Image (tube, rainbow, N blue to C red; front, side, top):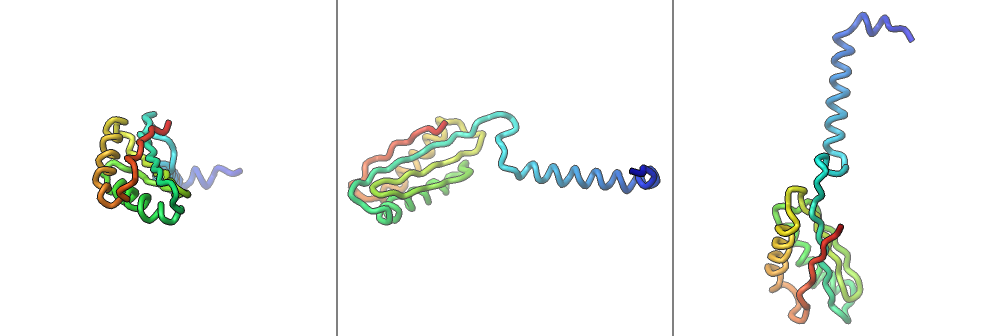
Length: 131
């Protein structure tokens, strides 16, 4: 390899290196890696049981109303849900700054807010901590 083009154009090479560093920093900040500070984000799972119903009924009457309420929470990063025969599983991923106690309180408040939209015979769903 000849070094003469690099030596003759130091400003161009410096700008190229800076541009590569900017692109790398932007890509790294958008990558789905763990929190760089080492903090774990609170993740909760809400499981509802509605025996004797199809997955479509569970989805329409239980999963969708709860999922909408959880998405309205300000500190939620992502909500994913799965409707099965007679039950649903909703996973709520909070921002890293949110403590587990605050996450539980917000999830319970969202369930209470959705109570009027849920079937009357549905029991209060438990809130589980995902490790």
